[in-house]
Length: 67
Image (cartoon, rainbow, N blue to C red; front, side):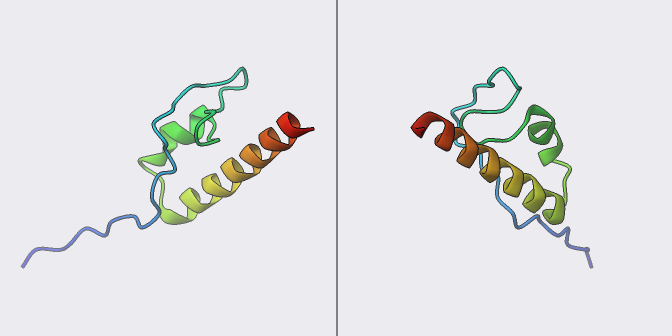
C-alpha cells in the first residue's frame, strides 16, 4: 500500500507575463521575487497569504495608474 502525497490546492497566480519592476515585484501576478521563489515549497496557508499580498499590490498599482 502506498501513501498518497497530498497536493497543494492553491494554484499559482502566474500569468506567464513575468517582468519585475524596480521593487522586484512581478507586473503580471503581483508577487514579490522572494514570494515567487518560495511558492514551490509553501503550504496552502502560506500561498493564501502570498496571494492576498499580491492582490493588494495589484490593486495599489491599478489605483496609482488610474489616479
